[in-house]
Amino acid sequence: MKFLDFFKRRNVVINTTEIEKDKPTVIKLSKTILKTLSVCDIIYAELSEGDGWIMFYIIKEDQLIRYETNFFKDESTYMQAQKILFKHSGLKDFPSFGDLDKQTEKRNSKSQFNYYYGGMGNHVLENKNVFLEVEIIDKHFVYKTHNKEYYIYSSCSGVFNCVAYAMLNTE
Image (cartoon, rainbow, N blue to C red; front, side):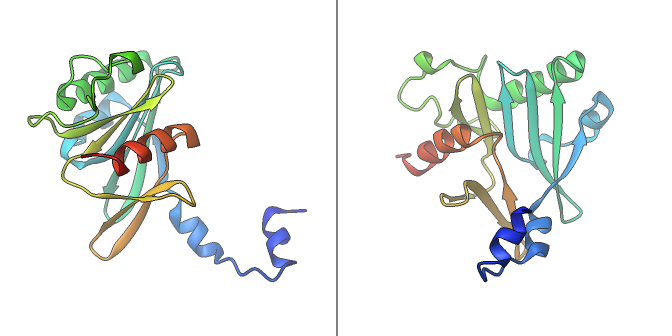
């Protein structure tokens, strides 16, 4: 039985155009693309030390785009993206869980991003000039701009839970 058929049989209405609308365009990040992107345009970035990937969300021409790269497939692009994120995070290195002082996650005034530890070697950067709403039920962030909503999904629910908790419990 298909996923949507399950709901249709129970008279649950699902707007499938909304489901499709929420999906970002996914683009493989390259060094060429990195040169053209402005750090100020990055809404949400996530870096995984263990899995060796980086993803970040940008809105371009009213379209949500998720750029991705992987250390094991393109080491030089990964390293360049990581260097850019470090430079604008205000951190010398992403801290491990034990190294977090009371909200290192909190704000370095000279940085472009707010930093959040996502657990298990995952790190999240949120652009300081945007406000992300936390949608607890569906486990995603909502960015509203110009009368539009964009849904931003973390790589997994564990990262979402850590970051949402930190966002909702800041002083």
